[in-house]
Length: 377
Ligand SMILES: [Zn+2]
Ligand SMILES: [Zn+2]
Image (cartoon, rainbow, N blue to C red):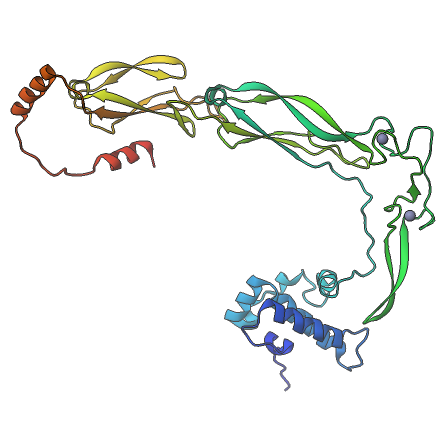
């Protein structure tokens, strides 16, 4: 009983297993030319061509090639190769073809369909508080808009376009082209009229035939509460106008939040570093701290260590999605006095005597670890 084993893909293309993409493409191009069923004189051209095509599709795909290298043919699922037809149907062949041989199979360009306008970007600088509470800004942008003078026809009102002589109004030109597979007719978009079939003889005096004009517009931008640096707001349809009835692009407003003197943002929380003195840390105190809603009371417990983190619930930034606000996170730093006067020095010396001179290594987690834990970083 004859049992024909599937040939090795590398062997089919005459390549070593470490062949790079360039070598793969070169080999495929050469063999495809030799065995293309339309041109080949070989008896088994069609079979060979399928084989070559299959090998190329697998080895040209990084993932499939890796699977094939590890598991051989068993690693390649035929379903991966373009549906139920598998390799038989030359899946995606036209693309490979165009790619390798540099011309299409008689496709025509479609440059004259509706074209969407380009997106625009505007960089908007806002204050820290504006990002937290939201704001409304007026910005000025310059964009391409539909020319109203000519109704976006490109022709001066009162004149009309004439039929293109190059393509006789069809918008397409046909050219016979010689190739390795014989001659064929290549249909392309007419270069003179860009496929419209018409040529403007008297261009619009305002847009000079381009059908769009540059306009400056003022646009109000609503910045919602809770935004953060580098976020962008999309204003649908406020970009450049489209062509040939295409939709306009979008305007993207990219936010840049100015740094605050005291506060920094961490998502919805607002971080604030506060200096307290040694006595406040040791004995506890009630202090006033700035928040975005004005000064608020904060209780310092006695025995507060440097790096202690206190949370003021609901004093952070509003959540952009969802409700409520984040917290204000107060990081306490115990400031050691550096400019004591004579009386203060005496008092600290007295205190020192009662505390003794013993020093000990710290057990457990230190300042930095506790601090990170409290902030969840
Ligand atoms: Zn034409
Ligand atoms: Zn115009």
